[in-house]
Length: 291
Image (cartoon, rainbow, N blue to C red; front, top):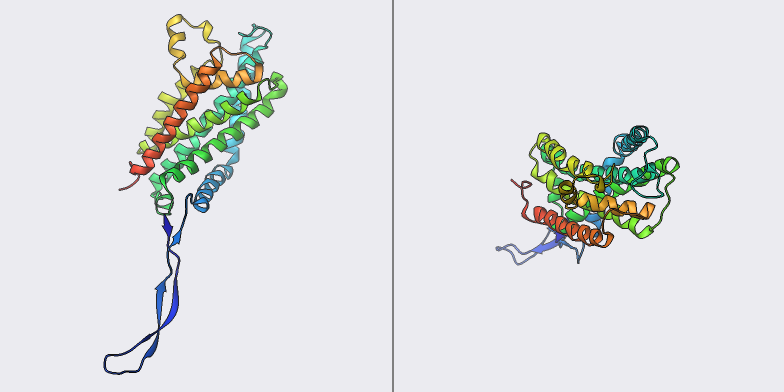
């Protein structure tokens, strides 16, 4: 990919046809285009920083509001459940509940970041801002998904810090906490790219959120163990990728899980890779982005 530099003024000599003498003439000659070998790090960094600054400008809405929602969920369910035992032996219900709420906030916000960014750009007609610069489809994918994942991880970290005193959280398996927090944010960031490009107006995006994202997060074992469900619903819930994300993240904090962690790790990695490739395909084809 290349980026043209501004023109420069150079002095050249021209010999008129009716005279042997040469006349110096100043002409504007464009410089050679700027070449990017490999990754356009300047463009990628610019896009990523733009996505970060975009949600930090309204941090009260994008970061602090999810924290309040998490605390309200904890308070309501802690009061409603009372002294009822946790699904895991030796683990308080608040400690069981908190990891699911923390990661649910990360999932929702990662999706919202990339989907709203692309949807707003389409509505306002500013998609040229990232389609015109010399950015490859992979660089566009990395910029948008990376920005969404950063917001998701930031919300998860802030929510964990706020919930820790109430739920007595401690890290049991650090690798699981880091892996599932990051892979969950990347996965939902990629889904946000696909949803944001697919939606032609905000109603479509709201429908996608209401009929796909919300059911996946609420029916994932966040508030209960899947063992409490009827056999049919339990079997169906095990096909929900969000279940593996929350179950793995909970395993990292409390050391116990509903499902098989090895299967969850592999399944979420493969699914995330597929979604990232689909996001790349969207940018490569210019689907619903280019007139």
